[in-house]
Image (tube, rainbow over all chains, first blue to last red; front, top):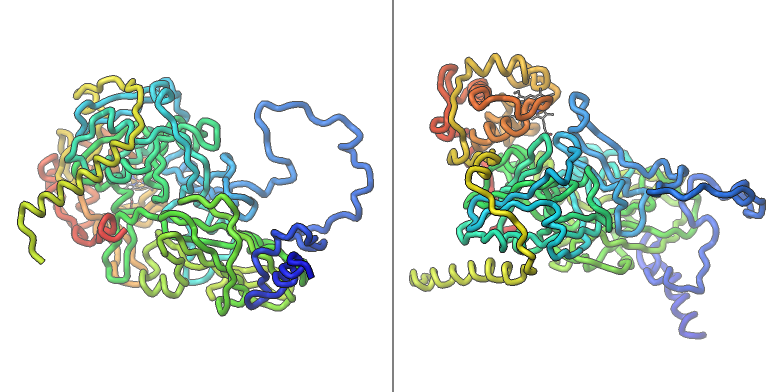
Length: 426
Length: 180
């Protein structure tokens, strides 16, 4: 037997309960996945031999800006807005409809306190004042001449996944449960460059950032983070920011709650103390069972979830499937993701798709042979600092259920014999 | 273990050096195109109000004045007397260590200055930045009064507002930077 064949036999044996197979299985080029491995709701037509209309007529002309296929109408943000104010609310990234690690710009989640301002960049300034030796004002053109850097990272709302605190498991596609998180390449100026130019004074400990929208959102950012890896971003995934993502400028604080990543940034005031804004006191603080609230819980901890299969999809009978999901941590790189197909009794290590980047979506995959019996799928992530995603019972025991923000417990999907999936607390 | 005062100071200085020195050294040099911002210009745009009252403008108002503003400009969304509306509850609230606590200005917010800061920048939601400073003091006074924190005729101004101590002032545990 050749070495390759030995490996092949090896990887076809389950490595954990519920039919989980070795993560190297899909790396074997020689292995053909049989039909039926997909998760499509509609079956494929027979052979594809029939000549189709689009093969016999000229195609559509060029377009100035491309749009998704009309057949992908379900890959959209779900909007949940205030009936009294259409611009107050959220929209979710449909994580269950996406693959890879980058979120398309038009599907990046939104949280607006008061709508999307249509800012004329010629009339927009970034002003630095307060504890600076030389308070300064930058036009957008000034900033575009600064040395730019790029990095990929997640932006995640502190309130993402908060349905997990509910007493009963929410039944909704995964994007509308965990999709207040999106991952992009951000290009901008290190904030430290601008702080240096304005001459940040040594007694400045906080920067109060403010947006130029109708909510005038303000929030306090520690100077340490501002000097570390904070960006004043101008571009997202190669193009200038979209209005709903902060055009013409926004802050990016990799790994920290999204509310600090102020959009439409127009002002930074350096101060000794935090301003104690509404969004760092009344909101974005977590009430604990003791009656005290956690405040300045900036870092988004390790999280993972299986996006395929997930509620809303249906498995087409027993057979070989690929489990696929996302893991990320605000503390650094994902070191390992493990998957269970027996409700957490046994775990198998998933393959991590390269590149594995710090504070970024990391795609994990694992082959699985489902025998048709009911079971529970779970995933758990551990990051390079050793932080591991907790079981829900442990998180609730520690934090209670009234904290609202920073829910990162292990997510469980029950698979029924008919191939349907549901969210369970298990 | 005790440490001589000078030793402690030296370590503190070192920490500051590491934080600032390292950050600023790493900063790529820019073309320095920023225009000087005058004190008058920064004062004109500065609407941050700090817990010690820094940033509060001149002006004044009482809950009695504020009730009229509230009833005409706020109650449609926040309900009469700050509860029962479509937007957040502003008054009342149940025990914070109970099973389903309502979090309001009266039982949850730590600082009275935050009410002024937030109302000035964001409210009323349908016409932000439309209230005068006197009106903001007045409606802030009203929100404090319906929470039982001040009287109907107590004047709120740049001196008195920061002196109003909210009940949940000590209710917060700072996670950063001690145990991030």
